[in-house]
Every structure is written in C-alpha cells, then in structure tokens.
Image 1 (cartoon, rainbow, N blue to C red):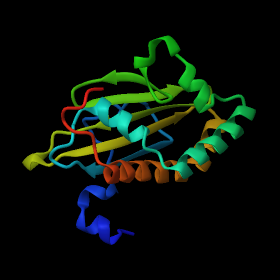
Image 2: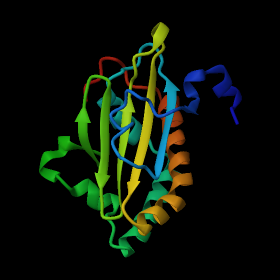
Image 3: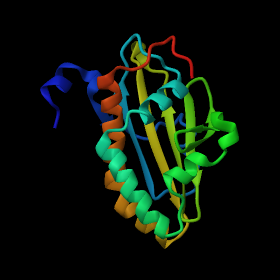
Length: 186
C-alpha cells in the first residue's frame, strides 16, 4: 500500500524490479535460490556513488529490523553459522573491505557488490546506480543467493519474506531521512 506521502513523493517508493542485466550479480551463480531487486528514485542532489549509498542504506536499518537480526543471530549461532557480529569482526585490520558485516567483493563507478560465503549458502548484494534514459536517477538494490545444502534452502525459505521487508524498509527509510549529497565521500 502506498501512503499519501509516498504518492506525492515518488522518491519514497521502493518498487520491485527485474534483476538488472548490467549488474555484476545478475549471472554470478549458475543457479540461484533467491534473486530479487528493488529500486528507488534518487533526488537530483543525491550522490550516485554506490559505496556511499551502500554505507548509508545499511546504516539506516529500522529498530525492528535490527531486532530481527538479533533473533536471526541467536538462531544461527546454534546451527554453527556465522552471526552478523562475527562477520563484522572479520578483516578487522582492513576495515575498508567491509560495509557493516558485508564483505566488499568489487566496486565500479556504478556498482558495489557485497556479500558473504558460508557453508550453507553464498550471497551477493549489489547497489547499482544504472545509467537511465532521460536523466532519471535511481538506485537498485539486488540480492542473489546460492544455497549449498538443505540447511541453506531451509534458511532462505524462512528468511526470504523478512529479507524483502527489510530491503524495502531500508530503501524507504534512507529516502525519508534524505540521501547523501553528491559531495559525500565513502
């Protein structure tokens, strides 16, 4: 449902879109168990630097989403999987190689690819500012997941609905707060 505020301000609406063909994650795995993408319009003064946008988006999680991550961490720790806290501490001496608890895999002028590999699944997240016709400025947040085993498939089955809520919420929340300006550095 689109609120009156979202209807009058399209930059507050995140919408599901096809996985962008130009994204580095579009064909990263031979098979995927989850693939989705959400897009939101950027205002004219906002940066289109993917790393700046990624840092901003992932630092603006709603308190309820942070609470869900704590529940997730408590559950997966018992299964021997990495928690978000453990992931955030990896590569501690090279802080520039992570955004939050996500490892940075590649960065280009238009896209940053983040993710992690674990024994149950591998995933990649793309923050892409595609070249758009007629000067439209958008950011597209895409996720692809490849599961290695039944545990990974079960995990994705239960987590996918929450993942989608969190992604859309994070994009809307970042838009409401106000995107970083074009002068922002990573």
